[in-house]
Amino acid sequence: DTAVSQTPKYLVTQMGNDKSIKCEQNLGHDTMYWYKQDSKKFLKIMFSYNNKELIINETVPNRFSPKSPDKAHLNLHINSLELGDSAVYFCASSHERGGSYEQYFGPGTRLTVT
Amino acid sequence: GEDVEQSLFLSVREGDSSVINCTYTDSSSTYLYWYKQEPGAGLQLLTYIFSNMDMKQDQRLTVLLNKKDKHLSLRIADTQTGDSAIYFCAERGYNQGGKLIFGQGTELSVKP
Image 1 (cartoon, one colour):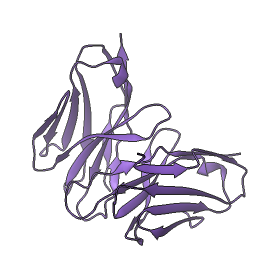
Image 2: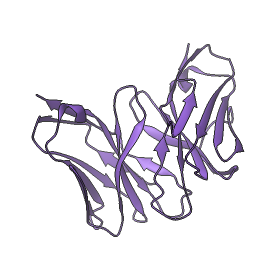
Image 3: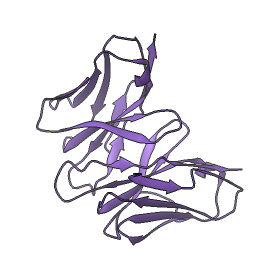
């Protein structure tokens, strides 16, 4: 019973390529997020979507484009990959209507750009 | 801007208590969270505390919050080797669209 799942788990690609990472949650949450974890383990939010609407767009290059086809899915497309994009990308979800707003994270996608 | 700070390393002996500390700057924090990350894995939510609480206990975990000093701690009682991991504190500000600001993570090493 995977709550937040991501595919692929590992992604190795060359500079200049375009790639996508997919995320799905089966928790019935209304908000989904993308976080980036760098080589020093530092975690920073990139985007969030609430009911398919973009809520947070941090200072992220416009080569990164999130897409939310429905509440349960949030995909991340990256154009013209650069070496500095190598990181672990985590998807997360939460319920933003009341409660303690706990965010549940997926297992991560380790992206390596060569 | 908002900032969350943690010490990077903590080493304890099996059976001892571990205390991981965290400080934050955002006075509008509503909830504060502790996550655990094992090598190669995602983040597991351990516990959280609402900003108007001082303490929360959940089995071996005790969270203490000093809102005046903006200081949060996580105490793990009877620490086991399986507790070895990186522990992140995170704060959620008011009206920030759900954004979590994370500390750098504290690597807990438990020696037998």
